[in-house]
Image (cartoon, rainbow, N blue to C red; front, top):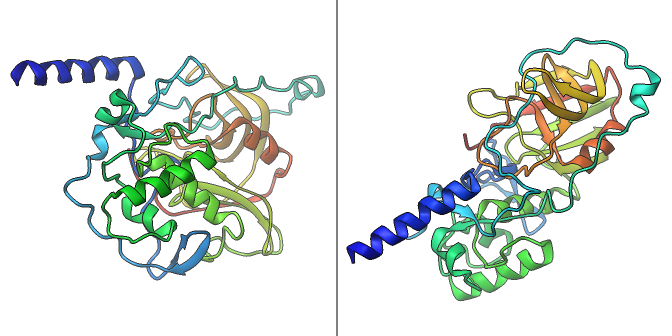
Length: 321
């Protein structure tokens, strides 16, 4: 028994060293609790329903700190813990036409694969259908219109697995983890991301940043002209600041001199805080240094939507570290 425990512990240490673990958590890409606002609404199966308090997860479920990426990351996805965002306001200048003509390099294939965080035993055993209760079991059950008891069952696993297969989430083992819940929130927000009315409606264009669900979109009046798309906002120690802001500088090929790292399609709206692309997964437990990170294609599309002077509104709270 003792030797078996030592062997399992050694395996866990080796896996941790190999994948530089960012632990799966509620903060990953909008994996929040129910609503983020008292008396708000939450998405269930794509429909808006009255908010309800989230029940306590059963003790049988794994702690979030025990979860690991369910498939080994490749060189395209380094699972970096810290995101090298610009912490101080940049020096503003007018880029030349020649500089703006250069398009930032695209992300490598597979960079944004949806890799779910699962219990270590599931990852090692490559289980086909998990028997473990996930940290978002209740939310996922409710979204799929299953019996919402917060406990994994064979029927739950089959239903969650079917959703994961449709969305390309790996592994599709039916475990209700943070990436699956984040994807459900994104899907539920597609038709009407501002159903709860958290982003102010104005006659002019507003970029809405929802920290609760880790989503962003752009609306003009009540019409959504971009998104919603997933984002990763600032960590607890360096949060993306709330309230109204304004796009004051756009720099397509920005390079962070503080962290010697690219910030493609950077659109600054609050000192050193910007929308920009990252060449890595958004689904990490640790947030940025304050910037709003996007996948490369989303950052490029947003670049063509926003202009200097456009307003940005940020609300909510990002869970996780």
